[in-house]
Length: 231
Image (cartoon, rainbow, N blue to C red; front, side, top):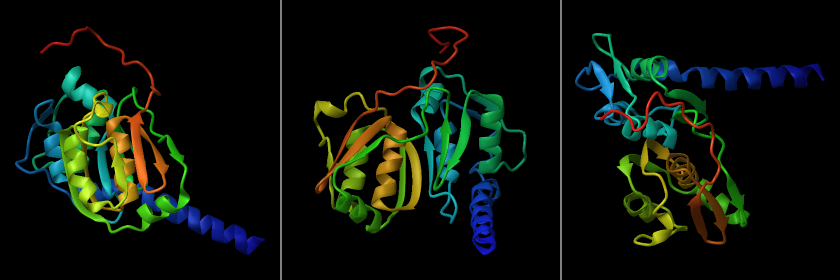
């Protein structure tokens, strides 16, 4: 029993260490051009372009509440004071000086707001399809900036053998959020999870297909100083 408890503590310690290491990893990723301000016009581009392949964080995802803060409410306008800012400096400043928040959900780093729910809603009807997606060839690099479903699907579907629905040029995806995230070496399954987190969608795994739908769940309503926001 003592040996089991010791092993459990060791495993828990390793997991905690991995979760805590993401700031150190991002500290080694410089921001191109040494920007001194992050706002609606450059934030996502600067942050996602700086994100590099690493063993800890496989995807950096702006969730729908975060993109609302950037593009709809336009309340993100922060100053970077470091001479040579890193990706960690950027995320730390965003979370300290704006309504954005950050959470590590292995293997994803989520940038979110109070609007967002961080847990996915997935319905599994066919386990073998899930296992196939988890075992599939990783997608080496993905980056989407305010991309709609059709654009994203056109990039990921050729690398994922399972049919993804809704198909392009159909009305079923019209109310999905636009996708803003970057990923390195994501499995097909992780790619679908990242897409759902970025697009405010849920999905159902069927035999040989995955069907995405708008996720009706919602977090807290944002507290606005004024509406409509200043432009």
